[in-house]
Image (cartoon, rainbow, N blue to C red; front, side, top):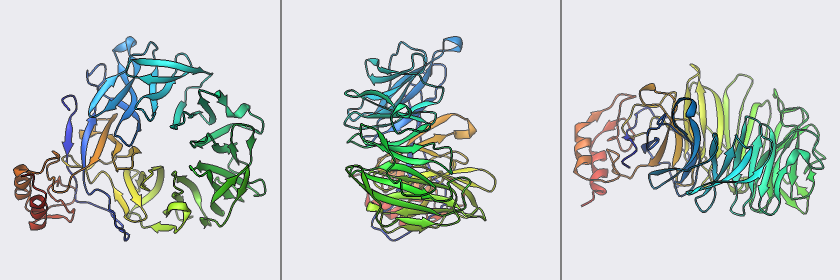
Length: 451
């Protein structure tokens, strides 16, 4: 960890809407600021993807002035490795199962494979300035977007631009791919009144629900070949009408819709995301601009409406982990962003108030990615310096100072902070996040004391 600053803290202001469940989110997180190991040109690492082994890929700015380039990096076990690349604008975007990565080179318009020894082009195509990879499966399917046009690459099938396939009628937005190579998304995505869902299984693009009138979108496909399908008879944008969500079974190209997961009326700015287990998150506004968040459990059952922190006027969903944790950001009435995590079992937690050792991150602390253990990549700006990212990991029970060991220093931290803590203060020793440091926090330290 010699090349990384480690901060530790949390604030007392917590907005939690608890729902009965056996598991809870971490109360506090340890922060590692992601920095260039050489401080070359800028210290900022720009991360894109985090996997379940806490590995990260992204890019760094390398060099100075007119000689500055973008170079991919691989992060593992606290170490950053800058990967040499022979091109000027090379980025890592998605990790593979073996810890290598795939990315994009803007200089040569290439999809690249990245390992510690360097970057190798695996496919060439014509890309625009807003190209990125969004998914990599263990079976080798690489999914990406060139603005709103999707493409897929796999060693056996090569590079496929979806909008050039039979069945495409407009720009073809790719949303997801599963291990079988089924790609789903939306034709004409930006036309909210006329967009149509599609799936592709290696042959032609097909509309999975041609009988549904109005507009449809397909937002995910799970490992059981089930499609998360959204239907808006009156269109998705600007909205205000009925929105119905299905977890539909795809069998030999035929879709069985079944019962809706949810039907929502008067929904504006509707959004829906899902994971590989059929857990679905939905957000929208009503005509009075109040945001809403609805989560459905595994297999799309038992939809639960969550109570949000007061004063929030907008919500943006970023992702949902395989453990069912939704993450994203709220916007309050002062247009300040607040990162959050949420689940049906545990309600909503604001992230920026749970970081050990630093002031509450507002408007920073919004998540870019998260894994099944609750570790996240978040935006970070200590003392309001822009353009940083950090890795946050769940703190151990009894760890009052964020060192990942529970010893006499944690006891001393609790004693030094004894008493009530004002909202917004740095309060790592408030282990149970109840606004006071007292005997209960001391007992937690002693229970986990590393003798």
